[in-house]
Length: 285
Image (cartoon, rainbow, N blue to C red; front, side, top):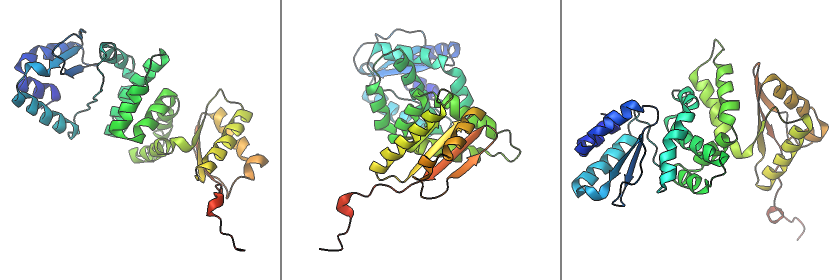
C-alpha cells in the first residue's frame, strides 16, 4: 500500500487527492499541519489539517509515517517548514530537478536520494538568494552530518559535474558493478570536508594553491590525509602536473594513492599532521 493509499484509508476525505497526484505525478506534496487552517493553495499540494481529525486518526497517521520510512518502496521527505512560499515552491523546484533525480533514483542509497531531493531544493533557493540556513540545519538535524556533506556537494554542483560523469565513465567498463560506483561515491560524500574538487575553471596554480591550503587546514585539525577528485581529461592533467610539484612533494609522507580511468581521477595523499605542543613529551625535565 502506497503512502497516498494509506492516507486515504485514514482520511476518506482525501480521495480527491488521487486525481491531483495523477495529474502531477512528478511533484507530489502533502502538507500536514496543526494550525486549523488550510491556507496553502497550490494545485499540486494536498493539505491535511490535524485539527479537523480525531486522536485515533492522528495516531494512525503517526504509525503510517513510521511504516513508510521503513518501507524500501517509498521515498519520503519531510520538511519542517511552515512558510507557504516554501511549501508551495517545493513541488515546482522538484519538477525543475526531475532529470537529476531520475538519473540517481536507482543509483544512490535510498536515504541519500531523499537527502538529495531536499538538497536540490535548497540549492534552487540559494541561487535565488533566499535564506536556506534553517532548512539545511533541519536536514542535518534529521539525517546527520552526511546530509550537510550531500547538501554542500549539491550546492556546488558536484552531483551533475562530478558524480554523474563518474558513474557514466565507470559504467562503460565491462567489469563495472554498481558496488564499484558506490565505493567511490562513499569516498566523495564521507570525505567531503577533507577533499579538493578540481574543476575546469581552475588553473594549475589554482589547483596547487587549493591543495596546499587544504593540507594546512587538515593539519590543524589533526587530519593526515586529503582526497583530490577530478573529472575530464583537462582536470586530470592539471592534477598530475601538481602531483609532481616539489612544493607539494615535500609535504607528503608517502607516494600518493592514485585511481584513475580515461576521464576521472581520485588521489589520496597522506601527510604528517601538526602535533599540538602540549602533546609533546619533554625528555629533559
